[in-house]
Length: 274
Ligand SMILES: [Zn+2]
Ligand SMILES: [Zn+2]
Image 1 (cartoon, rainbow, N blue to C red):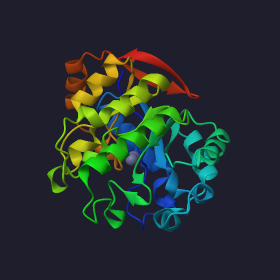
Image 2 (image 1 turned 180 degrees about the vertical axis):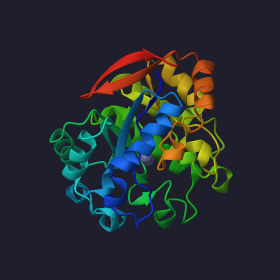
Image 3 (image 1 turned 90 degrees about the vertical axis):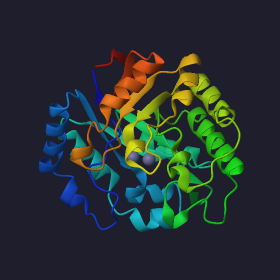
């Protein structure tokens, strides 16, 4: 079994209109790409900040600009397709109850939990760059993985997305001097306690860092702590479905992972990879 659960039907481009992407024709392009690449389980997890209902959770200028779609229309549309229904939801500290109400009111197959923001600054978004005022790498990395730990422990999510996203810019931003395992530690502990699935995402291969998320060392620590893994490309276009899966399979085999998580109705089971 191969899966691609962390997919976006529409590009991140702000001008993109939902009605152009939430169409049978567009879904068919994703399904065809998946079939060609031998991916048996496909699901979509649109960004929560695309939906007007998200403003009940967080009032951030980036969300305000983007929150134009209707979440229930999206869920209804995905249910008319063979895709699994997911959502990529940010972890916003202090908004746990509001996130839970939004998620529990809909019948998702899985929820992908992400940390993109530290306070109101983003680790992966130039408009709100956390590094803009010369961020201290030790502080940024500590805070990122502590927030990731909180996200895992919140119990809101089934999959922990792109677990070391903080490295997205690669050498274009300062790296901490310490052994990176020092920063991973609190997040790995939270993964172990919560049982959340750890996403292996090939999206990092398409970003300046040019690496799979997470680093092999992070994945190894999670594995030693008893974690299970989910596999995704974070594609925003059909041509990126299953992107870099040869490398992802090598990566998983290299650390000794033989099974991946498959989701339905927020229940998970494990299937052999391949
Ligand atoms: Zn993301
Ligand atoms: Zn995504």
